[in-house]
Image 1 (cartoon, rainbow, N blue to C red):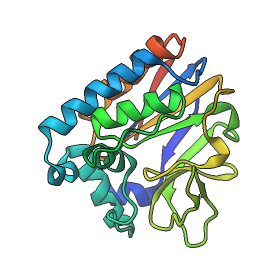
Image 2: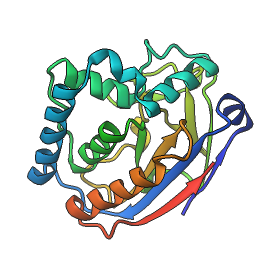
Image 3: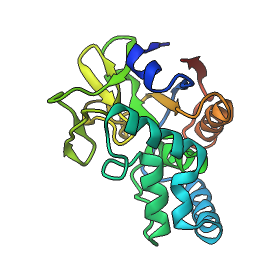
Length: 221
């Protein structure tokens, strides 16, 4: 498993931060009908019970937005991924269909409000990861976004540099059909409450749709 630590600058910005990491051996597929039935059911629930103005008030999303502000980033310009996904559905746009692992992580993020990093574990350099704050000019290629300005964003770094922020993960460690080991990191800027449920939800979906035994959960903070 990984040695995941939280920098002093993040602890200062968010003293209650807690994280959970799920590591598992997986088999990815291009599409899974059962998973998409769950995504469509959640989409219907969200769009019929939620006011768009209330999205940013969801506890996990609100806490992530507040940390952005404390770290020096405007959360309305660089939205946390969970918020961006919910807003997309509320605009009547379908969720992007990428592959089973990405779609699965997106569903957990949508349900819980956590921005979740989903990484191909075999592409991570080393076993030490630290959560810090992005620096001016720090190189980072967001998935499908090109070069991303991560100054002021919380960022996980391996020994080569940044691999994931709550807004976007890095192309270097992204999951694909070749992925055989996943590391999913759940960011609890709202604290411990709900974190275990989100991690167990991730395990359950991996068992159902990614031919996995669910893997192991590691808590840190």
